[in-house]
Image (tube, rainbow, N blue to C red; front, top):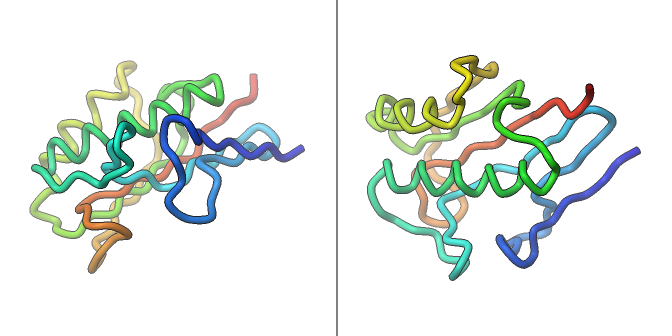
Length: 128
């Protein structure tokens, strides 16, 4: 069974996508940017502020599916500048409170949708 999750009231989609798709025991979370849920605007602040907002948006999507960061098995981080790598890592790790981290890929990109410097997508396990 496939379920499509869209948080229209919290994070209105800015393109034709679902925030997440649950297929079997896995949840595939669409890449999140530093979008302010209140305004729908992408913030262009410090990389720390952007990363916190991206992680909070991911947390909203995971919560809608009834899970948390503890079930994440893979993450992909897209950065416009690798000078942000250490700052992103500090914030990213704080969201995984068990000290266990999912598999991960970090990719340098020329640009992202909107004007942000970071985007993160996730795959999570929802089975028992």
